[in-house]
Image 1 (cartoon, rainbow, N blue to C red):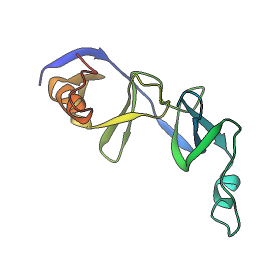
Image 2: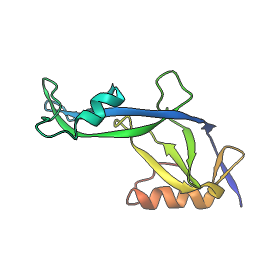
Image 3: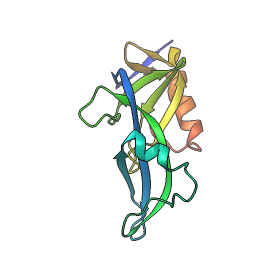
Length: 130
């Protein structure tokens, strides 16, 4: 398979982190707040309300893979392998927006031509990778 010149950095999963995800009521931007495992589990208790952040609406809370970066999240042009798939952080205002490819579509930390086609299809043919 031919590869394209978009070089990626592979990150290792080092654990799990728990997050609240909020959206700004002003500009629609996404804000991610890391929380403790206890706070996350307490959300399931009867009477637990929705997380609050002034000026934002709560979207969801979840567990998320923690990778070997200072923030614990993937940065642009970084990827991790989860259950045979490559999860790649794309250039997006959403700090958690990723795209999944079969791991064979990354060769020597570079996305193959087939992988680029698959990414572009996933985003309704908006050209994200060239």
